[in-house]
Image (cartoon, rainbow, N blue to C red):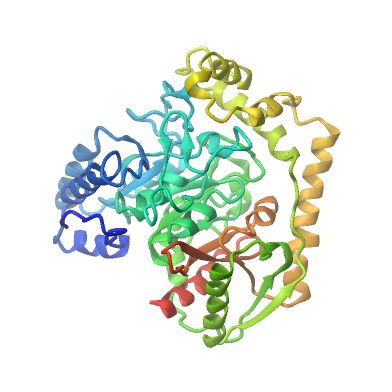
Length: 478
């Protein structure tokens, strides 16, 4: 594992290959963590200045060494034994790292405990290498906030075109960190497009799971009805592997209790099929494709042709409507309720106990905290915070009806489809409102080198099927 030059995104070994090398003794966890720290040194704050890593775990090397000793004495703790992972900085880690959502108002916030998903990762032997930069407040602060910018961390850049190509958001650092070779795998979160967008923009695989498949406990929230964590990885196998570890019921998260029977499985078992005979895939057009540049559209059409060559029947022009929720009614109501609860229970945030305090802090430190304003925070704070508003309740129920029974489920049933296909994150909003899963996989690069993603979306708990299709596509492109 030598240093990378600056000619493009570096070689990025898969988690699958790293796990094999660790098991065979070709590599130690200490050597692995050392390598990734060196890569971060080269290109995160200097060199290409990707700026994906917000904080390094000060105990990372000690943890790696201890896992090497544990492997020799006791054997393997779990499936991720010795594998480094980057965690988005809106996910609690009960260690010496902060959890800030990229906000200066929360720069001193230390979580008392690991988020449920982080505890599962540690139990599986993962080394939490650091916290990833992100779009501040998971892109729920201001209407004109650039993807990948936070007041605390600055601007994340896309390794495929630093300062040229959009890095995607809000899990920008998680994706850019994997793409830049700073870490083999990362965890992001999504409310509406925040995993799919940066994964697609950085030529990676991203899984936005069914809401409730992964615990929401210990994550700074936007929307309890749409929030979910998910994997961002180099390959479909790696992403499915990480999903298998993070998924599972959490007694403190009611949303996970309806996932029992779906989450206790190894998702990599579905990655065996190389053809798609008998699979029907639908392509919503209209608003989902109308603003796509011709060169990206050509790559998307090539992806459809490849799926056809694998035996899939691709039905184009599926009439799926697109949401136009500029007011974000549900999200603004749920954000205030969720953030107030989170801040009330995190006592290390001095003088910042609710959303109003965050807004006041930002106003007081406007020169550094309000580069792009905070209009979304202010509008959210104007809601009742109790979720009793008839406007909110109506919007929430309408979102479910339109996205599920009148949206994704209706189209799947009407056309007898196995899944829907989108370019990049273009279909993320309707899947997010339904709470349904999506898997994005690299489709190709434009002439200028900009990544284009292909996204498979299905009904609730259809992750096994979506991963099967994404894997077959990935292997055919290899």
